[in-house]
Image 1 (cartoon, rainbow, N blue to C red):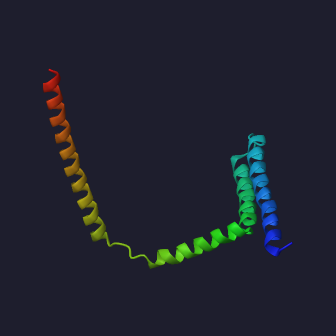
Image 2: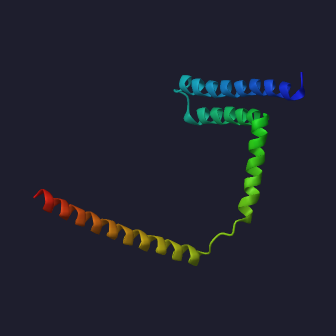
Image 3: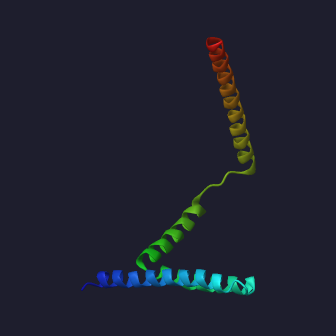
Length: 120
């Protein structure tokens, strides 16, 4: 058996473990409803952290982690608009939307007037 096939089979076990951890968290939160919310949230955060750690150990989890790292690098390359550019662009969009709304209102009124004239 190849290493990739063994990894894929072991990944299935890891994903099943993640599902079991999530299910345990849901059931435990329901069962311990009378306990303090703080303790339940801490327990859920702990279970969620363990589930996330196990999920990141799978092939898809590692690929997702790489994707997040690459996205972070790409975000650093983005040239964000200045406050003035943002304000000007927003005003242009608002004015354009108002103009289109007035044109559509006018067309709707015209069509309503024509239909009312035809129907009587």
